[in-house]
Length: 173
Image 1: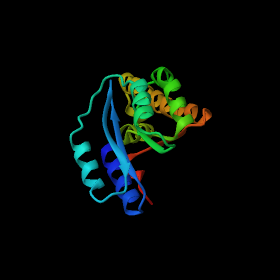
Image 2 (image 1 turned 90 degrees about the vertical axis):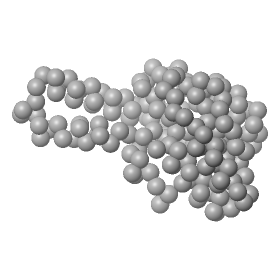
Image 3 (image 1 turned 60 degrees about the horizontal axis):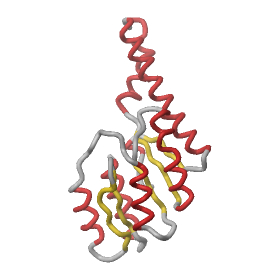
Image 4 (image 1 turned 120 degrees about the vertical axis):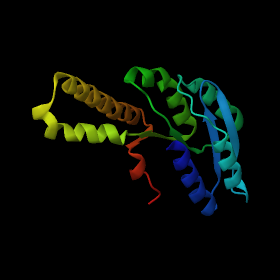
């Protein structure tokens, strides 16, 4: 979802004669495409994103901070597509997010799991036939959804723009 969202947003920016660039990172600073409005920028961004592979380990936000400090000198809008599995995971990275927000305008985008959302909403209809395991699964799903909302609200308390949305609700309109 993040790749598609980044491509759509970059397309809009470039077509509006604004600059679009790209930074990827995981356990280290990854790809970097300098922000530009030049012809061919979309092709460059697409190629860089096509070369990316999902990694499921803990990401190193200090590497992102250091890499951006080296490559991006002027204040920019940074849209960070990420996921934190818990408040503890977010708190480990909060100092780096706060530093990014000082130097740039930071928007952190979280994608809500639509299947999980539907599962939570449909539980009331299944409650009468639910087993003990169903109740446990429902509570775990509710806890995860609550924690995602809590993460977003915590980031907002620190002045970091945050968005929790389903992929289908994220559009340029």
